[in-house]
Structure formats: structure tokens, C-alpha cells
Image 1: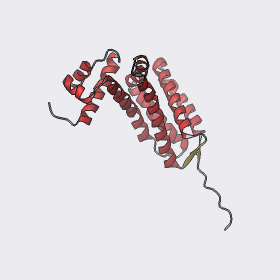
Image 2: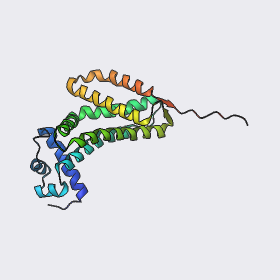
Image 3: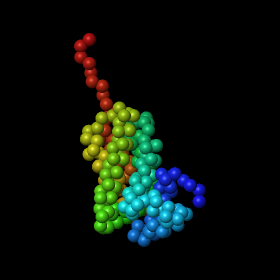
Image 4: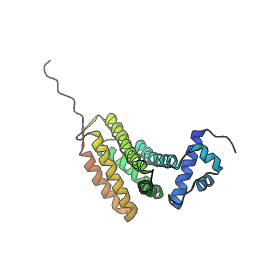
Length: 206
């Protein structure tokens, strides 16, 4: 087996864990099945992860990065604020529709962490990461378009995290992809209403 840097090996095992958990469910996924999915020995797995908690945290972080990265790429300034916000939501929604198993896994990981003794902090960390991700996206948009907000950044970040969390679960349960264009338009208009263009202060005197 070719030697691989430990960080790269951890990424390989984390992606294998995501595939195995999405297919078999979190409780039924074992370290042995993850190692087999990645095509490595069990000793390699234990060298990279010293506990299941460390693995679950890596999985949660990676799943968050999967969806955040596509939004970050799409969230570049466009002709109007509404178009910019809509592009970000559309990129996220396209990811949900393309990878429903990954998004379903995020909810399963939350429930697993809340129910498994010693894992409770991972559920909290998961939702803190959602807030951190939205904070980063808001700051990216604000600096790129000279915007100011009608609400504090932490409030808007947590609100967006809660809203997309609920919308995603709603879609996973109900489906009906044709209904989501109008829903995303409504969400876009609402979020754009919480942001306003920065207006330079008027100078007085000469």
C-alpha cells in the first residue's frame, strides 16, 4: 500500500465513512466497514482516528464543507443583491437535490450524537459550525458588495442556519422539487429585506 500523508489519509477515511454511513446508517457503520470502504487496513484507521468521536466530528465537518463550498463559489456579486442571494440559495439547493443522502445523514448524525452518551457535544458543535459557516458567507457578501445589515451578523447567521435546516428536512420528507422555485424566491426576497446597500455619509460644509 502506498504511503499517504496522514491528513490526506484522514480525508480518505472520512469520505469513506460518509459513504458507509449514508448507505448503512450511523449505528450500523463500524470502523471495520469504514476501513473496508476505504480499502485500507483497520490499523490504518486507528492510526488516523483515536476514537469514534473524532471520526464523527470529522464527518460532520466534511459534510458541512461540502455544501458550504458550493455556496461560497456561487456567492459572488451580481447585478442586484437579490440575484446574488438567490444564486447562493440555488447553489445550496442544487447540492441538496444532487446529494440527498448526505443531507439526510446530517440529521441522523445529530440524533445519534444526542442519544449516544459522550457524543452530545458533537451535536452542539455541528450546529455551531452551521452558524460559523453562515457568518463567513455573510461577511464575504458584505465585504464584496458594501452592505450593512438590519440585524446583527450572529443573529442573521443563526437564523439562516435554522431556516435552511428546516427547509432541507422539509424537502427530504416531502420532495416535490417543482414547488421549490417559488419557495426560494420567497426566501430570497425576505433575506434581501434584511440587508441594505451601504450609503456613504453626506459631507457637510466645504
